[in-house]
Structure formats: C-alpha cells, structure tokens
Image (cartoon, rainbow, N blue to C red):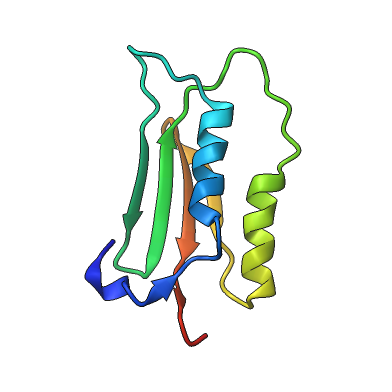
Length: 101
C-alpha cells in the first residue's frame, strides 16, 4: 500500500470477501493460475482485480459478498465502490476511508 494511505482504512473483511469471491467463481489450474492484484491508486482507492477464468459449471451465487461490501460503504456514508468486468478482468474499486471520517 502506498505510504500516503497508511492512515486510511477499508471496512472490515472487505479484501477477504473479494479474494474469496475470485476463488469461488474462477478456475485455478497449474497452467492457468488465478491472478489477484490489490493496488492503491493516486485517487485514494484500492483496486482489487483478477483475471476471469469462469468455472465451466455455473456456481450458485446469491451475490451476498459484493452486496455486503456495497452495504458497508452505504452505512458508513462513504462513496460507493465500483464493480465491473472488462478485457478479461473483474475489477472492484474501493474508496479508502480516512480514520477520522
């Protein structure tokens, strides 16, 4: 994490939920590893992305993980995270929260 954001936070378990989501919905094979990246941006956000390698059989999902994250930000009166897919990537952008907010 960029030093500028050491005093910022994310809601509890947010990163864990996103990593679990990536593992749940994607194949992980020796010749096709699942790549998960967690980075900070100059705009004060954390981006969590993974390459899309959807499992051949559709995994049941009720969307609780992502909606839980969106609800936490709403309860904290923080800007809404964005979620989208493009160019074979699943990307979630999470606004960092200042500790005294």
